[in-house]
Image (tube, rainbow, N blue to C red; front, top):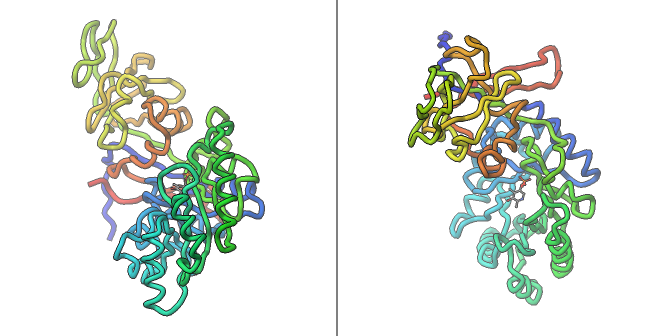
Length: 386
Ligand SMILES: *Cc1c(COP(=O)(O)O)cnc(C)c1O
């Protein structure tokens, strides 16, 4: 039995899986012989790891990265049995058994994590796969230089580890002329020579665009898969993946001196027509878009006026002919006219933050824009907002 509900959602988020597939292909072309993994942490940057990972797997991706153990457990059913799922944070003390039981490979970031994993290997009487992360300058995660010294001096500390990968992470990769890139690469090379031979990985999305010197054996792009610009100040070579459209709830005319929204932070300097749109900071649109962001109807820019509320925001639609926009109609908040990176710039943040905060209230549409088979545009509706 099917019940047809009218589409009463306030906003629709469209995720173009075909664009993700194209972006994965573009990264692979750029990487040549280097393996292209897929970073699907934070629910594939908010887009749905259960939907994104199978698309990458169908393209041949067999290496997936998540941040937390729980993310790995949740991801497992959505990737092939033979795929390797790496957990960037490594196992928290006492969680090693869980990682092994779910066929997850930890990234070991400290001597303590190395000891936890080798202890499990001893208990099981066999070598267990793991990745070693080295801190080459970001001071975030990975073995410190002092910890590396201890391992180099006592290599038996790694007994019981089947070393799948030695990795590090770049702090400034999106800025191609930043001296830290070369420094980190050099430190990575020096450190690797002190460890048992293993494949190496350094590059995130932006690292891929630093060129072949940074590619090593495996690259770990996330953001680029989801269409974010990998190189600061350069045109984005990737395809946009998300589109966000929100509905107009109400339209009103205001006069000079009238205020809009909490705190009345916008005051009309003359007659204005204001539309209230059904998306706010609870939907992941930062409050810093207040009096700063831009919506669109067609090619017409409609500035956000007043403070972004929890569930709504105001836009100035005076530039539109009367009647062009009515309650129930959609305006574009992210899309062809305003990319995720543009919205991030308006909000004073980065595209990563905009993507990963995209709300749970949206009606989600997953679109496969690739002309695969007889259905060029397969639309799958996901859930009804609660
Ligand atoms: C998040 C993350 C990535 C992916 O970074 P992008 O900039 O999104 O490509 C790669 N490696 C590590 C260690 C990460 O934490």
